[in-house]
Length: 330
Image (cartoon, rainbow, N blue to C red; front, side, top):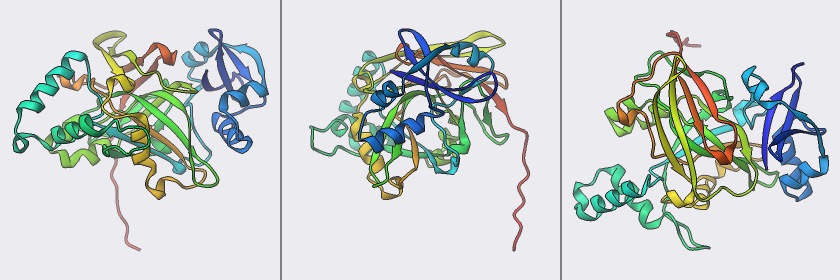
């Protein structure tokens, strides 16, 4: 089951479920987070809560998308309690890339490997532990809070000081922390993790700076298990025409870590188990237009799609005006 959040023509919030290739209104519901809390309280599943509330009329979600009325599939009244985070060096890429990567690692001496390559090798060797065991921890980064979460169709804002504004087509897990501090996974969504790759390339210690950018999520949230083999496309449109397009792979069949291992190493920290907090955790990618020498421009449109996730995620790029920040001593 896939869920979306939107505003109706009168500006009132609605939740819709994809049922038999149509979107049906979920009765008596204003948010997906509301459904998640109801499922936790009832010790039930999200899908069962949706079915119990029942379906109403068919909603024209595509028109709502075109009119800018689709919302991020997760939000809350207090965006400071949404944590945006992610992991890197988790994806293998295509079979050919995977084979080439293995040969490079096997043939190289330990001292000749970069830190990134060493971490990637750690994931290959220990990112998929046996059931009941803990695997190696991945690279981890912080992106911001819910004020930086951009809805489908809305502009991704790149600061004026940024050296680059590049897409990262990823899958994100969406979570809420229950009253007793236990994390609950609500679902999975497409994500544009959106980073400054030029800044990151200067020195890997600038990774933290390069990741402090907005990101986008949606439109549809998959409820249930993530497909093991996800095949999608990522493209950049300029004045309505594609200037770059490439397939991307995700899902555990194309990753060096299990989703459970990535989740464990995020939620093992007590700061990320505060009751009521929401987490959007992005699982990484192996596909970037930056790697092909593409330089994005103001007004370009990023488009990411994969059949399992229904509607594509689209966001125009907008370069912000310079901001002067003055710190005043008290």
